[in-house]
Image 1 (cartoon, rainbow, N blue to C red):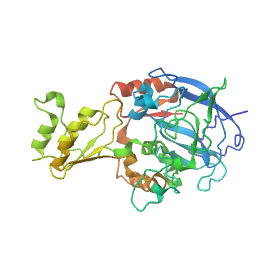
Image 2 (image 1 turned 120 degrees about the vertical axis):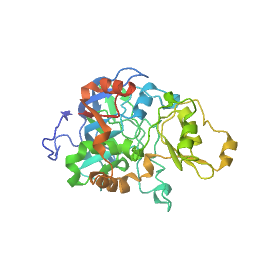
Image 3 (image 1 turned 90 degrees about the vertical axis):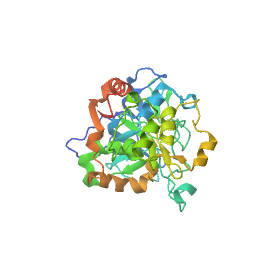
Image 4 (image 1 turned 180 degrees about the vertical axis):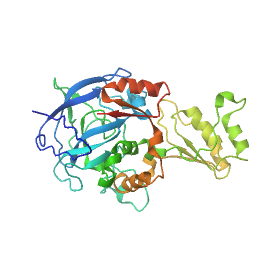
Length: 345
């Protein structure tokens, strides 16, 4: 059995010939129960099977979706022991049979909302990005191909996957539909491109001109917004996974054409806080997954745009810590002190 602790230096390309086709022993942050501290332990990572890719994770960051899964807020999504994480960047260590668009040494970004390119959704004339096989599915805990895990504890216990990605580990196995190749010219920016796995792609906070603190108001937020905008905004976006905030966002839009987009991940069991008759005012509501991007075909274009300054990725990174301090990084998010904390593996 080979130990796969390969570390590229100075941005050099890794050629991991000694680990190809073999089980790798590496470190992973494993969560064993809702709200329990992450345990940094040695695990076994199987080689990629047909149409799969094994990636050396170099950087990973923490999203509120990871926080929700860690807390076990939705019973249907609970599965332990588990390796969370879905925002990352890294290098392809090896590829399985049938993978033609990726090779060893490619620098990549994993994505939770994959694009197989074969199903009806991927090939539909409309712009849907909900791949039938690899669309977002928080309950998915094994690989699609054979229904098995690629992660194992040393005592033989399987460790579950998360969101098609599982990036809180030195090595991860993903289906190739969930791996986006990065233009080699963008390689020096690989750390920042970690944010494209979810947060910024799903909906970066661009163009903010005003800020309202609800604790300083004597009236509901939506009433203040409607006053400021002379009737309501054209579009509102709910990003917090809070149903009370969602209702305020919906009521903040203009009657007749207001459009609310849900981005936040909402825990069970509460349902949509809107009376059916309120929809007769002409307001609409929908949800967006992964910003509407088709990951494999459209994310590389967005990455280029980010490097051209369309989105300033540096401003989203508030903290950087070594992987061993993942519990501290989660606490920063819980305390509201962190926007994105990059963990270096």
